[in-house]
Amino acid sequence: MRCAAFSFDSFITAWGDYTLCKRGYFHDEAAAFAFVEGIIWPQGPVCPHCGGCDRINAIKPNPEKRVRFGLKHCGQCRKQFTVRMGTIFEESKLPMTKWLQAIFLMCSSKKGVSAHQLHRTLETTYKTAWFLAHRIREAMRSGELAPFGGNGGDVSADETFIGRDPDARPTPSHANPSWVEKMKVLTLVDHSTGRARSFVVDTLSKAGIAPILRANIAHETRLLTDEAPRYITHGRMFADHQSVNHAKDEYVRRDDPTITTNTVEAYFSIFKRGMKGVYQHCAKKHLHRYMAEFDFRYSNRMALGVDDQKRAQRALLGVVGKRLTYRRTYEQPQA
Ligand SMILES: [Zn+2]
Image (tube, rainbow, N blue to C red; front, side, top):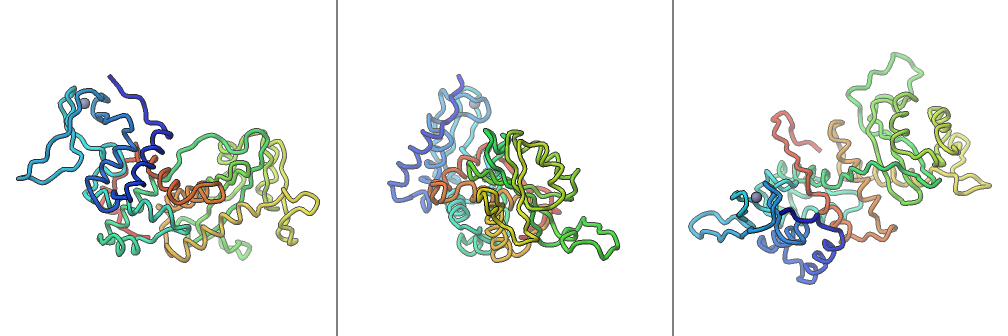
């Protein structure tokens, strides 16, 4: 037989019970495994090989061999497994206590935590800390596909630039704006839900951003942008399009204060301070993971009633099915 999927409510109950136990899961490996099992299997262990949940027994550790915490045996397919299988924890030898500490640190630090900081705090190598942080960013990736701004809500869209884009090929002209050679990020913020969704893009041309706007914003939305001409045509795809003119120092429309892009600008403010102050450098091939991290914290921020504890809970909910390996040897750690 197959078990029912775990629910958010049962997970919250499990987390609450464990927080009352003075967070033993941060320093005791058996407690850490029990804690993660309580989240991923709130109704008891489920075999990742066959999906069965009957006749699953914990294997008693052999004192003469290496202790494998949380090792289980499935009576149906006769295979062994632990809760790490099929999650971001798979392929990692790092103790579960350190995983949980890293998740909490990354979720509770508004501008992020550098791999160097994780390496010193968790007493791992820098390389391990770097891989660890990227796997946690993968857990933070929402994977949500529903478009923003349904029911006629407001969605603001804007772009920002960071670092240097190695793929940028500016034409030899003095007319090129300074951002052409930088990496480009397009961010959407749903004003109704407070959630953010960011995209690393190669171009900000009308044709380049059209598929993103079309796939991620509902037709009944009122789109809010600055005066950039790239949005004029796209604005017609939606119920309404209003813009503020930053070139004329207009940041909030005087006769209608709901017309502004200050919401998405505030997101960029946190993102820029994090990237410049904490991460300092980011290669383009990894930028989408950093965006997932900043999107996650912004979409689960205190102003929306999500405190550090709840934010870490939500990140842990994302560990399942996000197995991420860096087996390719050319992937060198870099911030
Ligand atoms: Zn099985």
